[in-house]
Image 1 (cartoon, rainbow, N blue to C red):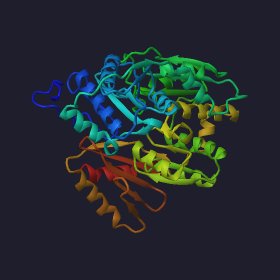
Image 2: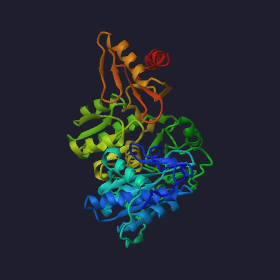
Image 3: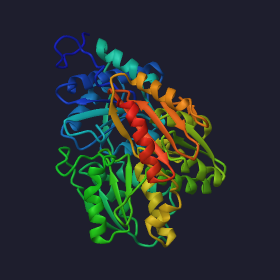
Image 4: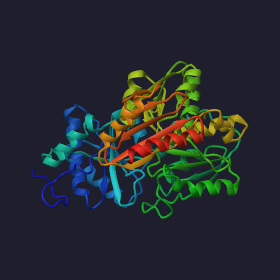
Amino acid sequence: MQAVSIGFPVVADLSGIVKAYDIRGVVGEQFDASVVREIGAALARLLIGEGATEGVVIGYDMRESSPAFAAAFAEGITGQGLDVVDIGLASTDMLYYAAGTLGMAGAMFTASHNPAQYNGIKLCRAGATPIGQDSGLSAIRAAAEAGVPAGPGGGTVTKRDLLTGYAEYLRGLVDISGLRPLKIVVDAGNGMGGHTVPAVFDALPHEIEPLYFELDGSFPNHEANPLDPANLVDLQKRVVEVGADIGLAFDGDADRCFVVDERGEAVSPSTITALVAVRELAKAPGSAIIHNLITSQAVPEIVAENGGRPVRTRVGHSFIKETMASTDAVFGGEHSAHYYFRDFWRADTGMLAALHVLAALGESGTTLSTLAAGYSRYVESGEINSTVADQAGRIAAIKAEYGARDGVETDELDGLTVRLPGGSWFNLRASNTEPLLRLNVEAPDEAAVAALRDDVLAIVRA
């Protein structure tokens, strides 16, 4: 069988859409249903080669191309003789729930927080074990580019509705009994939170004020990317207007959750990581807690103070999940608002993190800003990007400048991390996909953050 035509002028080349952790690109320009079918067939061949015959569960988001892509992918799977369970509209963490409970490999059609013209695929093995570049994605790409040989066919497609089971499973992981009623504004960003939030939250004693719950992959109100502060403005305004206790914002595939306090101020994902870590340690004393190297220094400090074992990792969900498995960690958090739970197949679920925050707030009898202050000790700059042609050269210049100073410590676990006397530190790392250097700074106060940020950027952008 020859490689299928996917709109490229000469040969099928998937290098532009196969990323480190998933497949993602512009619909109609970089991939279409025909290449999706080949990727499905390639996944099936990989699974069959590994001895996995349970089949594949497929979910998809609200983007216009998602249903057709999911159907084409199912054709590729069934053509190789494996069965498919189609769960229809789903969040990414709902797909992980399906892969975990059904014991099947999974494929989620979503481009997460990317703009409307994008779509993509997130893949996992049975039990929500990730498939990344080094764990099967490169082989899938190579097979799809070459053209997958025709299979025996005979696979079937079965439709199942797992939304209720997903919601009940999550609620069963958090003690929500006896909570005081809260007023909550939820911004779904026209993404999959509009589908999953009602199913999970309707059983709670809270008043929900919905923002943009209509599923619409054109994102008519704002991009479903709460990591960009511009996309939190509507939520922040509404929280203050209605006197809400808390605001929650989900990204397009609803696997990440961002939190806003009653004043309309964003709560750092590092603060949420520390809060949830303390709650998980209360259930599993002495357990490991994973944090990536960009989360606040407050996280490992608070984990240790509460009897846990803080474990630092590189940025990226594959590193988090691998380290969680090797340390049997009960929880892990990233600066980007990805939260991982041992009780959820070590997969990330913003919805479960949200339930923990609601439970903590409901139990506290105080405001969210007061509650969060107990888990926040330093000032963070947030991620600052610089377009740099010679990334390695700029990082080397920073290392030469700061490494020569007294009392400075450096490490290169992921990019360059520099720790200065007095509690300030920064990390500078290169983007995997763009000519960018990403800078994160933390210090005891705003003035120290600004001074260190400006000093580093002067060298980076010289």
